[in-house]
Amino acid sequence: MTDLTSFIAGLPKAELHVHHVGSASPRIVAELAARHQGSSPVPADPSLLADYFEFRDFAHFVEIYLSVVDLIRDDEDVRLLTYEIGRELGRQNVRYAELTVTPYSSVRRGIPAKAFCEAIEDARQSAARDFGVQLRWCFDIPGEAGLAAAEETLRIALGERPEGLVSFGLGGPEIGVPRPQFKPYFDQARAAGLHSVPHAGETTGPETIWDALRELGAERIGHGIAAAQDERLMAHLAEHAIPLEVCPTSNLRTRAVASLDEHPLATLVAAGVPVSINSDDPPMFGTSLEQEYAAAARLLNLDTAGVADLARAAVRHSFLPADGRTALLAEIDAYATAQG
Ligand SMILES: O=c1[nH]cnc2c1ncn2[C@@H]1O[C@H](CO)[C@@H](O)[C@H]1O
Image 1 (cartoon, rainbow, N blue to C red):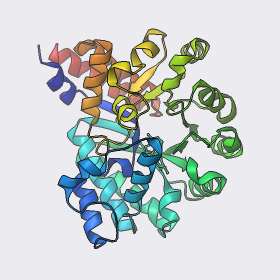
Image 2 (cartoon, rainbow, N blue to C red; image 1 turned 180 degrees about the vertical axis):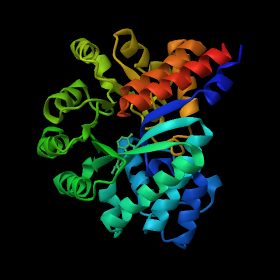
Image 3 (tube, helix red, strand yellow; image 1 turned 30 degrees about the vertical axis):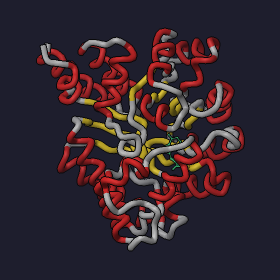
Image 4 (cartoon, helix red, strand yellow; image 1 turned 90 degrees about the horizontal axis):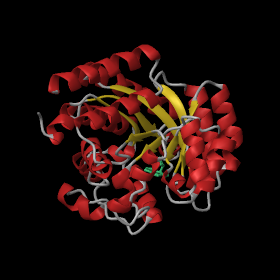
């Protein structure tokens, strides 16, 4: 019987909650920082990034996150970043990933929407060809930028409509950023066939998740860990099969939870809430999807069969068409059987 770490490494996986800029590797971040001759607070020495990616609280995390966004100045940076993310996902045997991309933040920094979308699409096709990784996009509104960002994100999503775009989200801080104001934008995105996947219940309580469900038509919830504080909400999520995209180490590193042992993942699973396991911003949190699977296995006391079920859940919660899901589920079954 293979040990859990190597089982997870070889297991075909899907990732549903992982951010574009948040996935920039230390090498790429340092390379981009070096291009800007010290005009950025971001260290150009990869070995200094671990200290730079220490967050006092969520607001500080967003501040650091945006300092990395500032490094992405043109569509070549976007192409490089996205292709290298595909390489890293392929290295971890991630076959399919829905990457959360924030076009507003780059367009506002001078990259034309058309060039931005062409760059991510080029990289998506190259990653499929070179690494066997299927990438899809969630375009999210950076919540701290408010309705102007919502307007622009919707305009880009519907105006450019890159082939890989499958969903529409809302990221950034929740405190001071009530969800209901974004209803008109989510209504239009959903009417255009995009799936609704806002963040909610990461840094605020269950009421933000209720808002995301009732006002934004959420089909999945980014994080959603605050649901564990509301039995009725957990029962609702279980009954209506509304999955949470859980990112354990992210919640620890942004101080959303005090320690991994206090993470509510086990409470959510015990209540029958559908969950997938994700890395969110892996290099910034010093983690990887593989390490998140290992953390979930520890929190849920899973063996290899249980870990294979985590991968199956992510596929089932994904926006892959039925044939794509069937194929990936079959790959997982074949792998789990072979490792028996
Ligand atoms: O864990 C997270 N929660 C919320 N937003 C996040 C997270 N990780 C990355 N972002 C990103 O932070 C930016 C804020 O402008 C957004 O681009 C959002 O996608």
